[in-house]
Image (cartoon, rainbow, N blue to C red; front, top):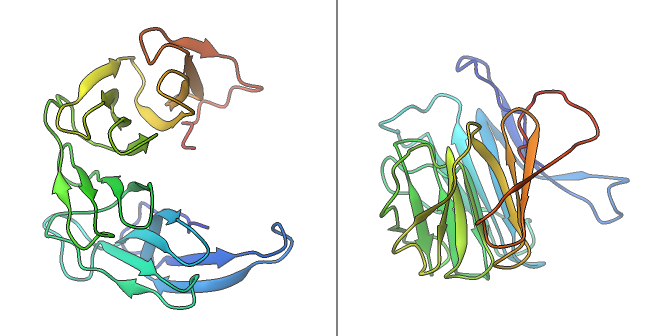
Length: 217
């Protein structure tokens, strides 16, 4: 569960991780962090999980009290803070197994990184991006994935190169693919588009109601 995000940097919000064992009827708290917002959570299995979060007071260049990356190896009973490099913040991430993952951040232009050692080290993979503000990543395997950076980009060689996959007026806010061909992208303005040929063509899909809010997930 992710705590609400506030735009008021003086407001003391608190990040929580909640856990249920009965389908959501009851929830109990695994982790509480005052003055932090949890942006993304990746649960790999019943033991291993990760959280990316940011301090409400952190602005580039980040301080030691700003972005954090936490890992659990015992199902959330304990959480370890794994230090991030300077000017790195995790706004979205996807773990493919216990060690290999992708993440992106909004802090400084296009910022997409990969790890193969559980987040101890990260390697930047931003070649060929022409827009900034990387906000979403989604991979179906370690080599093939998509990134939302205003527009939608795709890689088939583990981020060594990225190619523009879709360009619309709205900004990408969420991505979900079930294979290399079939997927959906959520945008600003309460819009969803669908592709069945890997992004060569996109079809707008009608939602039940029109609120004008972004499709974040």
